[in-house]
Amino acid sequence: MTDEELKDFDVAEVITPKHPLKIDDTTLRDGEQTAGVVFANTEKLRIAKLLDKVGVDQIEAGIPAMGGDEKATIKKIAALDLNTSVLAWNRAVIPDIQESVDCGVDAVAISIAVSDIHIITKLKKDRKWVLDSLSRAVEFAKSHDLYVSVNAEDGSRAEMDFLIEFAQRAKSLGADRLRFCDTIGVLDPFQTFQVITDLTKEVDIEIEMHTHNDFGMATANALAGVKAGAMWVNTTVNGLGERAGNAALEEVVMALKYVGSVDLQYKTEMFRELSEYVARASARNVPIWKAIVGTNVFAHESGIHADGVLKNPKTYEAFSPEEVGLTRQLVLGKHSGGASISAKFKEYGIELSSEEAQAILEVVRRVAIQLKRALFDKEIMYIYHDRVEKQKQQEKEGQSR
Ligand code: MN
Image 1 (cartoon, protein in one colour):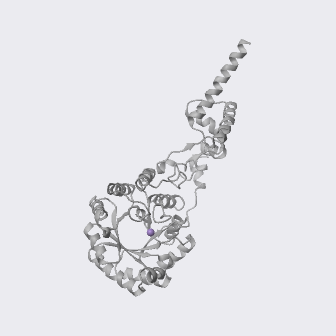
Image 2: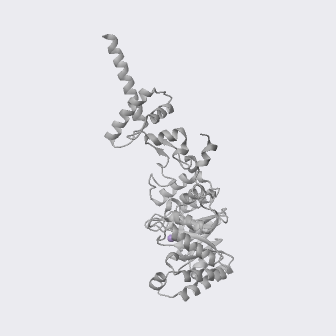
Image 3: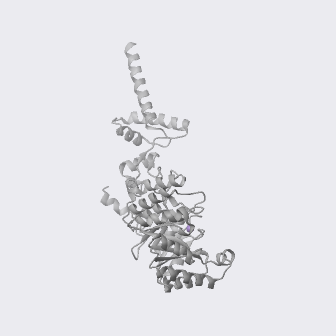
């Protein structure tokens, strides 16, 4: 089948963006808030540069009110003169925002809780206090010509009427967008779609999705929000972030492109490099099966899969490995088939007969079961050379007899 014909098999369009979609990456803020993670100042600068190079629209650089190194580094990031917008995170208090102004960022997030459990139990205040605090903070930020994202913390557990009132207040104060936070990751994609649909109906303000992965639905919920009209997605590299993490940048971007049909035109071929760098800087390993950037994502072992991929990669791959900076691997082990054996030897310039391939396959399977793993290329070559030696030996013995 030609590539043209195969296009008919591509996944149907399920997300129709009503707008140019944007990504605000918070690896440097929510990502660093992961328990036990600290980025060095130089690492923060490097991550900011890499994110800019990938093409994200905005980076959340940190929390200036923390002072010290954190503030100094945010100042340096703002001074890098990147293409991306640089946003700083703030509580809804004027001194925090003043610290952000001092850093020279062009955007601020002003965060305040909107669910009653947070307002009453954590803040020990009431809804009126929340709206008053928000008003003071946004007015101050706007008087400094900053782009303002109003963050509705724990928005997913807020009462809908109050969430709408909060969003309307943000809009009337001149805020540029509302960040809808599923702070503890308790929504599913269907609920998310409904909430964002209702919110966009009531209030004309750009919405950003901030979703957590406590039930493994962060990326799905971010996409559901986009489908309902959200214009921004807040992500982190590798899905780093509080507890189970946030929606992963690489997952959101690739899912938007291949599950939906929104191509953000990012340099996705940098994803593996970016993932490795953040993994090292955060001392959080990326599992080999991690969606999009795991090293096993384009590894094929089972006979049927490997045979399909050898005939046409689209049979078992949603997109090609080069698009995210990975390479395809044929792994030889317990589940391999003859086609993989032949293909592997072809890589080394050896053409096997189908009988030879079958004989080697039997040994490969036996050894893989003994070792409880796939075989290295070298081990496969040893099997081949042992076989050739044995044959020579047999021929010799035949002649001398
Ligand atoms: Mn968060």
